[in-house]
Length: 258
Image (tube, rainbow, N blue to C red):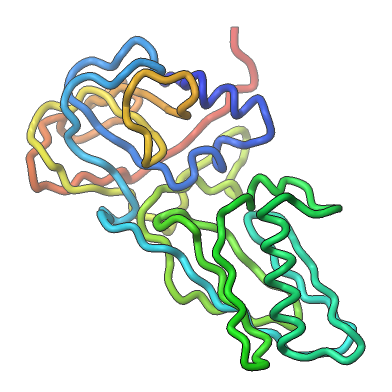
């Protein structure tokens, strides 16, 4: 039976979705029987941590945005679903546009700015650099290595991705249909076993979860087995050095529950 932690349920009752709360999370698989509650400390031995493509090193995502200089033009950058727009002056320069975009994003991820909602999706998440040299160019980098972010730009701007985050896992919020959400299709969820043993249960957690008893950590816990379990595997006998892959990952919200 899938068990949501108190921390996850509380966050979902607030302003966040399951996809955003668990973004950049990992799946840890343990031996033995699952604790009665996902709020409880983990038991058993950790066999493997499932990440994006078996990654063990966290990489900070970084993008470069370059402006085409136009007078009195709008320059829109959308970060994690929040659109921020800078309007250039009647005598625009590259330095003005890059400085304006940097200030706008820095303000939005700091104390918030008038008219911007959900800035919690931006708060403290980015390092923005004004490249300067009249280029109208900025770089945006994840403040925390391994934490991904969504970014797109409007007209008058060009986007280049320098490095991709290659660690945490993501559900595809755009794939939701009939109350079912799937893992991102372009992500390989896998990990190399650090120990041998018989898999008994898993936890989908954020990477910095220490596994101790907590009513604030968002967690999803379920059983592991070869049939009639929350995670179905070919064999529960995991061997050190072997790669385990999660081919299918779905989250379902039932229409009703008795």
